[in-house]
Amino acid sequence: MRRVSPGVPTLQADIDLAPGETLVGSGSQATLRVTSADLAARHFSVSVDGSGSATLKPYSPQNIVVVNGRQAASAGVVLTSGDRVAAGSAAFCFLATADSPRPATADSGAQALLVD
Image (cartoon, rainbow, N blue to C red):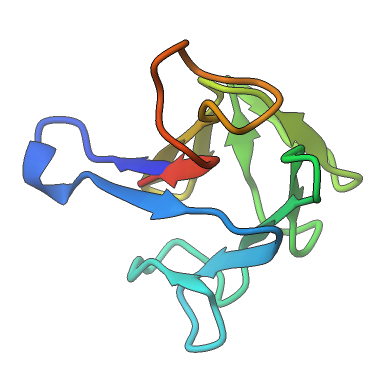
């Protein structure tokens, strides 16, 4: 997943998503810690299974997470390459790579990324 900071290209970063759960939030228990006053300590998670499929779930029904302009359901959203994720003032883009079942491009890298 890539964190996207419009107008500030130096704040972009790629975050490799290994199989299992990645917790995104502002708290110390978050796997991916984003310092932002408008993010909950545990805002949302992205779970990647053994086949590379990724599912985003808000950690709590009160946590607003938007995927491609639509609020993510509490049951979760299966991510596909290129999906845009917004939580508070943080923005991300999910990119699947060549080893993933849904590659972003034919010549992309080796793993699924949450681009921050």
